[in-house]
Length: 126
Image 1 (cartoon, rainbow, N blue to C red):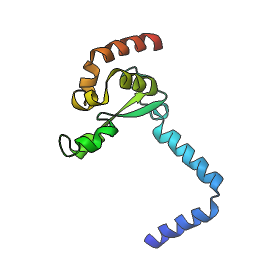
Image 2 (image 1 turned 60 degrees about the horizontal axis):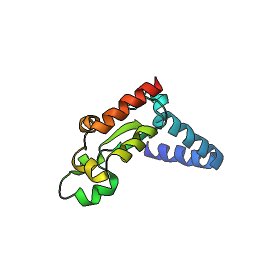
Image 3 (image 1 turned 60 degrees about the vertical axis):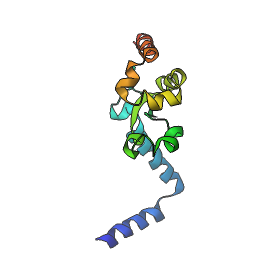
Image 4 (image 1 turned 120 degrees about the vertical axis):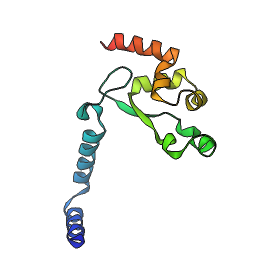
């Protein structure tokens, strides 16, 4: 059985040209990563396109906080938000504050400036 899998993978590798491999890669990324295709929305504004992962504890702080404060599971936690909300959150909150005070979805939503932003962007996108 394992030999059959290896054979089919090798056959695929020989038959697929780089062009088709790139097409397959693009299709898979569109299907699995695009929020519009899999029906996911930004948790702040509800927008369905241009979704990005936001690390609740910024990646630039991982090395500093790995041993002191957070487990590896906590460091890996992300939320899905649109690119505009993502940029705005990073503009409103410093990375240190994000790591120490606003490191959950609920706490992030309770930040006064984020609340104001969400109300504004929802009106604009309605």
